[in-house]
Image: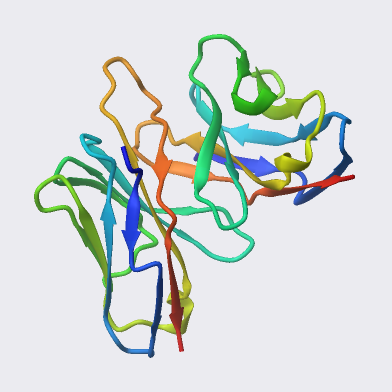
Length: 113
Length: 117
């Protein structure tokens, strides 16, 4: 069965420093993977998605993620954090052969001034 | 394009009552999803519609939950005989029909927060 594990429930970084949010997936097939962001009192928004094209995926707001099949990982990175990046981030996998999308438990990113 | 809308935004009900939520997807989006999100957790898939057909339903969904999308546009989610454990945020999302795509971006609504007392 497909699943995603977000390895950190909370991450704190200083403004201007790099961001790394970790996600491991479990899938029998070539997965479709996503990162979504949820700002307080706002709806979920897609940051980026991987669908077996380039392994390095660029998203909005300077975020990118690298698909590593050998490590079954899809970590989200950003070179320089901004205060507006403070939010909850979800790693998502589409379960192969179904219409079901499976969300991780989320990582809350805190950006310190 | 006004985005996905959900109504009501908040609902407080007493245990045992029935509630119904409405979702209006982005126009011409033929795919529609319902999720439930509890505090500190990611959204949990409930059901999926393609046009008016309900193609997938979570096994976690009890018989008290039912969803419809009668004309392939708006959708409703009904919970009968609510229980305190039903308290959660109920999210709706829609996706467009895109030829050749296998993984669809979902556009989420603001959610309906249900509190069962």
